[in-house]
Length: 373
DNA sequence: ATTGCTCAAGGG
View 1 (tube, rainbow, N blue to C red):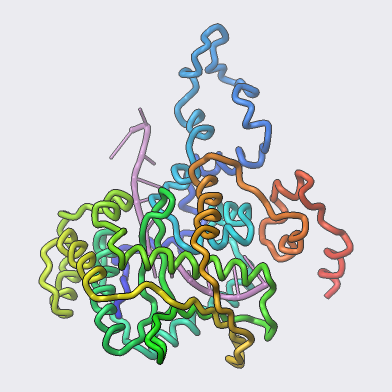
View 2: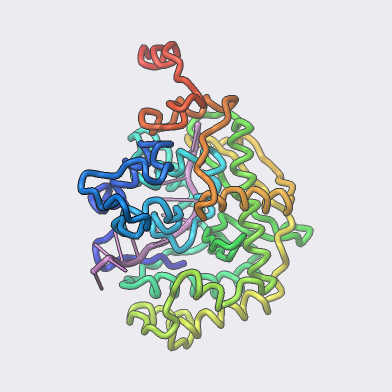
């Protein structure tokens, strides 16, 4: 299969905090101001842009007004969300928001567990296909590679019966979602089964909260995949949300790769049409079974298996609730008191407004026992 | 420029 390689050195991971703009810093401060900031004119500011008599708030500088009226989608400059944005949101919405504000803010221990998980997933992927790196320079190139992967994976699923890392995308409740399905395969009974592998540091069964989040994640995958094969994800919806330029020339390495794979495409637009046809005319069924497998990182022992009952109404309801935050229709929330234990392993407890606001008070005892270790 | 924009998942 194919992965993209940036020619320019602009990896988001590597740039860390340094690429944060001034306005993003202001947004963090704004967040820390908490409730006061929602009262519109509570802080006139030193330079008195509000020149007294004038009732029109138009005299506020644009950037300042923007902080109040921009939705999180706009503030974070997002055209789409990842499936895992929503599942992380299911774990703790506020933690997800802080994570967006401070990307790459992880303890080394956590990063380590994630890295281990990532390499186990990579090893599994390599069991099924090789990886080829194709240099890209524009987002059109990146999406073209994604589409080419889909075009080769669909026949592969139908002939070999198993594929890994299948890209999915589509509009859900007004927002465009993008994700990657771990594995799709046909069972001996001929049912299409999705398998999500979850690796764990400790050889213990996942807690209910963890299962709930993972069930939601795979449910989203089914929701999107089904829509794709049913022709509900149209080229125009895709182009509209991603703001891709279907006529922008693709990079030579991408064109070369497409040719190697046996596709004669001139433009991204061609490719999108081809993907749409392949998805809808390949006799792909909707996903019949959703399965999650928890394994121990070190020993690969299976710790547990979940078969998820797909409940479309419930999934849509959750998505609507989460999307309401992204659209700016409501403020982000922290966890319920019963789930306050999640805060103990959160990287943002120090700055979390939810805790300060009385949702949860950190127990000094717990903190001390933790330190004493 | 009234600045700009994306590989997702990775685990708890």
